[in-house]
Length: 233
Image (cartoon, rainbow, N blue to C red; front, side, top):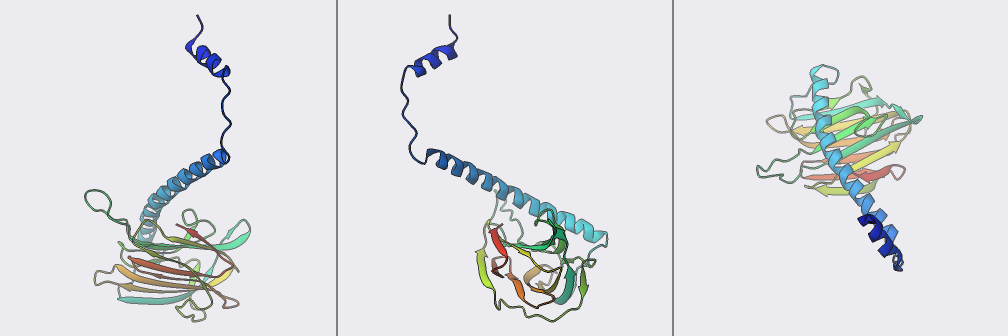
């Protein structure tokens, strides 16, 4: 007696099956890519929380600058970038506070992160500020105090997006000269928590603007040079 699968196969072979409609396989691939993108976004959210925890641990070890206690901290540094694929590179990621999650209304804090020599999640952290953590982190081994004073403005840059409370942010990636000028102005609450971060980046040699981010937990505005790549976070 033939197996059930053989019976089904023989029945199917006796019928002419219709050809797939135009665009059928394209639709399948688009659906697969959409699912992969959604999974990547979920992983990035988890990674961002883990990165913040790791950064806090590094701070405790004294490798990065200690949190500032004043209400406003404004610093200008010259930073030496690491390379990726043989080219100097930096990434800036910024996202606002998430909507309430679950029955207890937990929210993932908004953050601003700048990395070098890799992506936001595997590169060397140059700067980190998070809505739920006091002060900020600045890599004093790569960034030295001083450099040309630069404005906290979007002069000469193209809009890279405005993001309000939600599950979306911006990732600005620039391949530039080896050294950049980085200015950060951080405003904190009476409890020492960041309420606003303004971050401006320029080419240290030419003074050409590369990126500017104006962050609060509920609204993020970003701008970037047209030579940089802008993506979603």
